[in-house]
Amino acid sequence: MSQHPEILVTGGRGAIARGLSGLLAAHGVPHRLASREPDKPGTVHCDLTDPATFPGALPGIRSVFLYAEATAVDAFIKEAVTAGVEHVVLLSSSSVLAPDAADSPLAASHLAVEQALLASPLRTTLLRPGSFASNALGWAWSLKSGRPVHLPYPGSFCDPVHEADIAEAAFGVLTDPSLGGGAHTLTGPQSLTFTGQLAILGEAVGRPIPFEPVSREQWKAEVDGYIPGPYAEALLDFWASTDGLPVDLTDAVERLTGHAPRTFETWSEDHADAFRA
Figure 1 (tube, rainbow, N blue to C red):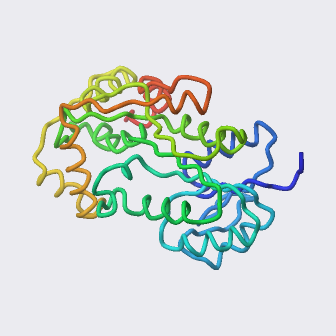
Figure 2: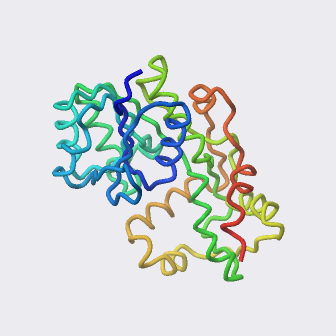
Figure 3: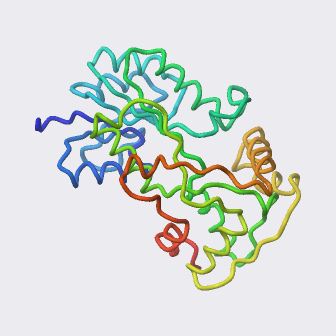
């Protein structure tokens, strides 16, 4: 095996990129970690909104793990083709499957990057996770401050997928040519309501987690300044659409990793410290 890095992992400060980098290192696969704000030795500067940073990150690279940033995607593709890149694995989102994806703040950027890659000469693999289990970290502040978690749609279902499973799926499609190409919707093994997730999380941290139903307007007011208005509205609409309706699960994680997806119980145990005062 060549000892020159042939895989570029963008988004180097994110949990999935860090997990993927760890897997590649553990298996002796040479790779180059890239970040908008490199924070450790050996990480190269690659800001997906700044084409001036692309030429320094791509030489010698054959495959790229790419975050879905649409700002300069055409320039990135052009530079990647020039550098000899053959395969791009995109961390997209299952939100692109919605009929109004092109107009949705949740999906539009992911969809734009998907379409640009699919129109390019680059072999493209699309990883489309549903709900990240790590979205639950948004409740940590409430728990630590002793306040109930505010839920506009307590009975809304989602398919929480562990970030380690997404990283392993990316590792699979990057290192096994037979798995690359196509689109894969990644879900966890359970369709859970928000209240179901809180109950599981309560077991992991050793105490019940109180919650309080709130109106859409109250929730929007509380997240104002953290979540832009249109994005908050899109989230609320999405939660409303799955209120009381279990979501479909897929076998994609098992196909790409060789094992069943990790449960939300496992995620909660892995992250319990984040929720303890």
